[in-house]
Image 1 (cartoon, rainbow, N blue to C red):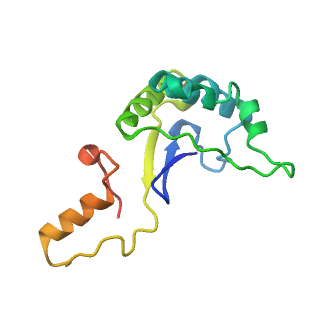
Image 2 (cartoon, rainbow, N blue to C red):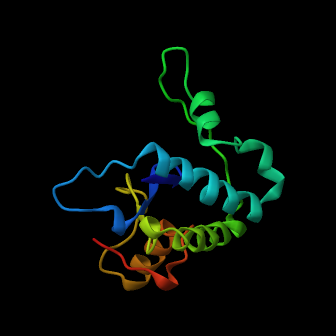
Length: 149
């Protein structure tokens, strides 16, 4: 499930391993999406950043109504979190997921897209490579990272 984005093109997804069964649809039911939004995502976001409470629709159904145009196409709003708060909703959200059998053991995956040519460095210089990598990952806590290349 796509959960958010960072910078221009980096996408953050959340995976629910207990929802996957080989040979079955990976679609998440409306009932479960409602639970995820109302009982987990909205609660975690408001607890961590209460000043943005009015930006989070009260119910999932309301959010889906608000984000559709007259042709029933989605145009999702952006609700930004200040960088210094980003870790807090993530930890709280994972804790709320643990309370629901199907959502237990959820984990985040960050996909960085469009990174070609972002930094200019000498590939044979270890210090320049390190600095370039730090520049690319500047918004992430890389102390606990598992990077798939």
